Length: 310
View 1 (cartoon, rainbow, N blue to C red):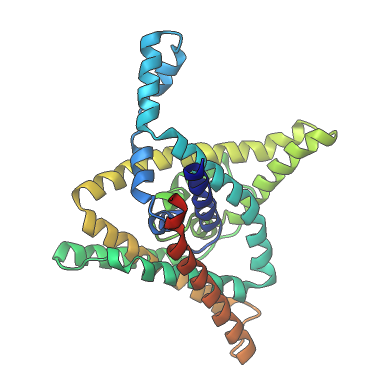
View 2 (cartoon, rainbow, N blue to C red):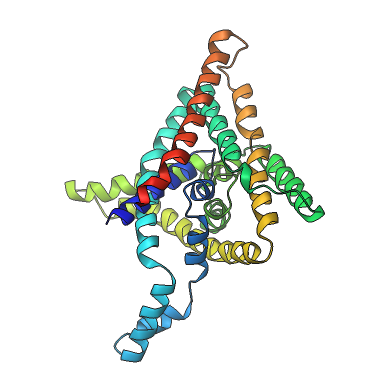
């Protein structure tokens, strides 16, 4: 139980990271020492488990299901997933509020999160070969370009686009660097998906107080579609990352850490573009303090998280 509680708490940290446009859940997984276990567990998913589950009355098929679940490290995934969901539901509404009420402090905090994460993972970087140097340059350039994209705006989103958004954004759970929330913001979908998530949650709770099932359908369709897209994306990206770690471990880790450094462009531009930003000691000092708080949170997590396993 202590080990599962540790995994649940790490899941909360991962979910909180992916719910804010800063550090990705994959970064937290690296810092907390569960990254490769996560990749291995997700990449081991065998689609045949679906057909075997439909014939679970057959002893031979039951044995296959048990074997496949064991290879997937199911208790680990369930505990981690529960923590991620807990954090996402809790944090997303807070981020939407803070992005309007205190953008300078919010994005200063994100800068500290990303910068400290890159420092913590510096030991994973290796640039001793041309391939590793290329991986570092490619990771930095990719994140720098993507994090500088113009955030589009819009109202409702077709479900097909929601599905594709989920498939793309979930890559942040596997790739340390750009968070899923940052990807959603760049795609102009963060507030839309956050509002639907909380609308779905409120509608479910409302059923206990005389609410209608109809109120669940619209936000529920958006949430379910996003989750389906995320599931497909997670299974696809995890297998690619697992292969890369097996064959080009040093270059892959260098690429992943370089993503974080390139992503620093996003919080800097958001701070400078905020309507409340001004080159005054109070505003600049507030941003610096917020960045230090974010960095401190990552350093404390790195310092104490491994102790939870024992």
